[in-house]
Amino acid sequence: MKRITSLVAAAASLLATSAFAADLAPRTYTKAPAPVVAVYDWTGFYIGGNIGYSWGRSSDTSRITDAAGAVTTTSGTSNLDGVVGGGQIGYNWQMQGWVWGLEADIQGTDEKGSRAFAYVPTGFNIAVLAPVPVALTQKIDWFGTVRGRAGVLVSPTVLLYATGGLAYGAVNTSEVIGILPGFSSSTTNVGWTVGAGIEGVISGNWTAKLEYLYVDLGTVSGTFTAPAGAPTSTFSSHITDNVLRVGVNYKFGGPVVARY
Image (cartoon, rainbow, N blue to C red):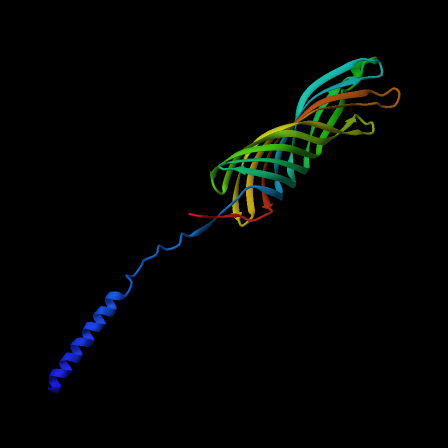
């Protein structure tokens, strides 16, 4: 009898366990959360620095008027090459895959070049007088630009852009005629610039860029008046520049966080 009772109890326990398992809710599966990816946002203020090299040119026409009133006119070019470096500040607006911006920069340079020519005084016995050497030296002391930028994102962190706007700068001109003391003058001119570049994110809010600018500072001119009996010199020089530079920028504000 005891054996029959034990078998009945075991069967009842097994049935109760099965019924409890049947009452349990089915297991649910949840999808893993999407990864969070930081996407760089180009909108905002930035500040940075740059360094590069420039290939400038002066296209000059000079006139020497001697004591007898005779005029000697010469034309020529000189290369104004040298290192450039400075800083920039700007603001970008990102509109989907496009970036629009404004940027201003100021550059110091050691671009310098010279042109040598000669003239023969008149009013004398020119058969016994040697030509008088003249050396015209010009230097771009500094220049700056205020430009618009328009670019397209080839990836979220790489920008190709075109740029253009106002250019301004100071050109120093000096001249030595024969054994006379040298003359010098400085002119600040306003012109224009156009160029293009590529900029990419290198770390966090830091970006690096490679940029080319063509700069036209217009024409600088002046007159060097010597003491009575000495020649007078007048120059007119068209100044242009080709600038290739690298730079880094720091953008204020963080990246946008998006889910993919």
